[in-house]
Length: 188
Length: 311
Image 1 (cartoon, helix red, strand yellow):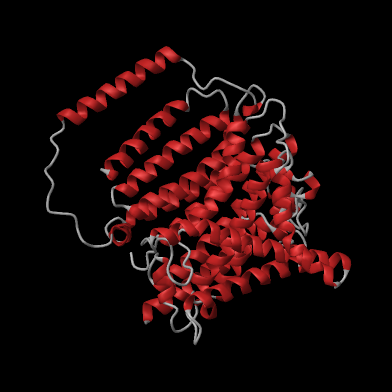
Image 2 (cartoon, rainbow over the protein chains, first blue to last red; image 1 turned 180 degrees about the vertical axis):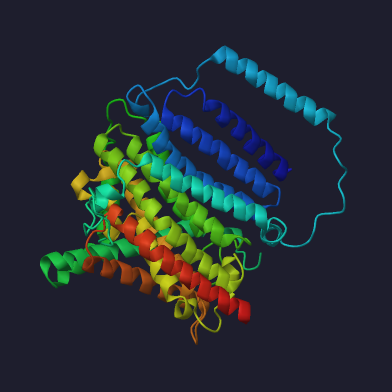
């Protein structure tokens, strides 16, 4: 009974706040509505018995959305996302695409030959099982993923930054300390 | 799920945390008064200053600004104390925590991370440039402290081979973690101050911004934000006791008394030590955190992993 109540409250809150992302007229409100939706999803994951994954969803999404709000405000036109703005455009085309995707997914769910459940839930700690899976059979995937993500981060920063090493260290790369507009704490 | 407290104790958690935070704030006020007026007998009266200030704020009018976003602003304000109390749910008080889930350390980290959203939202709310800059400052500070902080937490969990706070305490029945994880302990204390945007890391609410994120708030709003900051500071400082200082473990005295003594010692050290260090700006701390603290904490985690692997 309590479990059902929690499930429905979290589910409805997740869907409603997800929809509100497109109803709000302010970038921060839309971003934090999305965060609320994701926090509810984190709660649902905890309810599935996957405590670690659920709490990590809450942790990562909070930090990610807090940073994303900054980027959303920063990169919006109409002077930045600081002003009220509409969150939707091309409404008719988007509605058609949404309806199509929803129909395709629903048909897929109904028509897919789902396998029956094999065995019962293992007694072992799901956190440990997850760790063993990631560090065992999925090790190669995770290593590739990690390096790819890291390379993406580095290349994005390289592309985004206006100043390179010649700006910092001079034409012969010999200026010490570096000529930075904002000095860091290490004193390089 | 051992050590789970009865319902009464669960309901007492917010009040216990508030008492702890008020005591720390009172100690801070006494030290400030002594620094200003010398060691006269009257400095001790300032211990009640946080209470007086709270009552004063409760009677104050709420300030309204033009074209504000009160929904997000108040949400941010309320999130600060709420995050602190939720984090305190897994804090062991010596006779057991309100709850001791298997992923308690991660839960604590997740609740602290709510401060990221809270301070920025509080800064965004009043439609004021200076308070928004305060919010942005906290996000920059968060990017600096969060990674070393997570590695410090990971190191403690690694030493106990468990993410449960109760297990971390039990693993320190012999040797406290602070002895063989000193780097993680120091980094943890630094990030505890940084995430409570308090003391040397108080730039998001800095004087150069006329108060930063809290600039436009008065009355109950200000009380929740400033009081919530003390709650957050108290809970993060207190959590260093189960993580690194052996929790309730100690000779002769009962566990709750040991926990209280150690918590008071950590809080006292931070409150008194804050006067010895200058304000740390987030861009400076960013480079220190990523160039020095991240490698140091990684090495510390590696050393602990080797020890754990070989025992």
